[in-house]
Length: 288
Image (cartoon, rainbow, N blue to C red; front, side, top):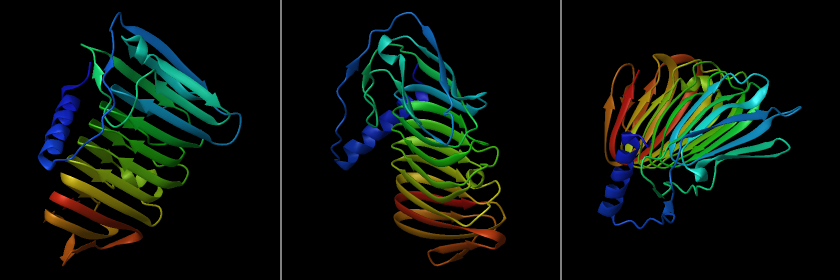
């Protein structure tokens, strides 16, 4: 079933849209007929050599990701109770896509069905990969630590996401791009992702960007957010520079951060984290 937190996020987005007088093009209602709960084993072999380009297109429901696929690119199980939600796997050389059946993903998939179930529990392999996740209104629990990610791109609508890099990326990630709507998103141990550049764009909601972990090289981060609360956590002892641009926003400075006008710094050794934050309105919290 769709989590209540996701439904609440959809309501928030709708209210913000009406308040701002913004016209949003939403996909047509997709009517599903639910039936008996079914399961499907998902098994995608790893490419014979080189890196993989893996795309996960997930509509609404619950998505769980973790490392641990043994000798495969993707391994796991899907549970669903509507035939339209049955996963479809397509491969073309090193390009692999796992998608939610016939669901049209465009920010927030409009689905009319009572008590529909759509759950993916997947493990990813250890070979180098560029990972892309396109999702709608969903609950996501993702542990991507230890995966050899060369790039990561996530785009979702009204979401409740908790993403962690519990272990360092054994490779180097060029770009990490996260675009979300009215959501609740918590990103943990981001330094372990080992990216050179990160972009985070969001609408209304609550967001945590925790840069704990081991920062191996200089990295730049761009944060663009609407009416929201954004918390940025950088561990004490990390060299960091942050500049802020905001209209009606408040900045709450805690811990070892030092303020000079609209610039904030933290003294440390090793690589430097450079962050640029732009907010329309809301609250920015800088913490350790």
